[in-house]
Amino acid sequence: MIENNVKNILKEIPERNAFGEKITLVAAVKLQSAEDINRAIKAGITDIGDNHVQEFRDKYEFIQGEPRRHFIGHLQTNKVKYLMGKVHLYHSADRLAVAEELSKRGEAAGISSDILIQINIGGELSKGGFEYGEAERAYELINKMPALRVKGLMAMLPLTDDVALLSELARKMRALYDAFKKYDGNFEYLSMGMSGDWKLCVEAGSNMLRLGTSIFGARNYN
Ligand SMILES: *Cc1c(COP(=O)(O)O)cnc(C)c1O
Image 1 (tube, rainbow, N blue to C red):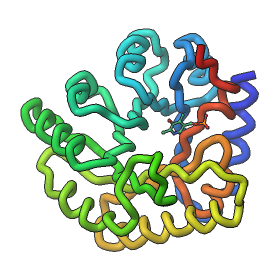
Image 2: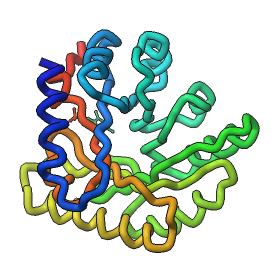
Image 3: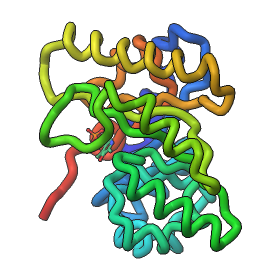
C-alpha cells in the first residue's frame, strides 16, 4: 500500500505542476515506524520530515537510504541542540526565539542552517507562525541572524472543505513567496500542502509538499 501510494503521488505531482518548478515531496513521518518509513524510501521518497524531536532521535539510526531530513513541526528552543547538523531544512520558524536559538547554536558549532519562515496564512488562533502582515519584518530580522539562510516560506492551510477559500489562501502565499523571491535569490521553497489540500496547493504554485496520511494511511494515535 505504501509503495503504491508513493508511486501514484509521484506520478500525479508533475501532472498538476503548472509552474514548471521542481516539486519536492517530503514524507511527514510522525508516528510511523522506521520499517514503514524505510518502505516509503525504497519506493522513491527522498525527503522525510519529523514533528517531534524525541521521535526524530529515536528513529534516526534506523532510517535507511540516507534521505534528506526535514523538521516540519513546532520546535522548542531547548530541543534545538539535538537537531544541529542533522537537518537539511527547518520548515517551521514560527517565532523569533526559535530562529535565534538555531542561529546561536549554529554559530557556536560552525553550522549554517536553512530555514523557512512559517506564515499563519489563515489567521487562525490555533496555529503558529507569523501573521501575513508580519512576514516582511520577520524576514528582515531572521535573515540578519548570522548562522541562518532563509530559503522560503511555509504555511499550513486551515482545515476546511471550502476549496475556493483554500485556493485563495494558497495563491496569496505564492504571491508573497514571489515578492520575496524577487529580491532574495536564496528563496527556493514554498512548503505548502498536506494530504487534504496538496493538489490545489501544487496548482497554486507550491513546490514542496508534506504528506503523511496519503502515503502511510491514517495515523494511529494510540
Ligand atoms: C502531520 C503533518 C503533515 C502531514 O499531514 P497529513 O494530513 O497526514 O498529510 C504536514 N505538515 C505538518 C507540519 C504536519 O505536522
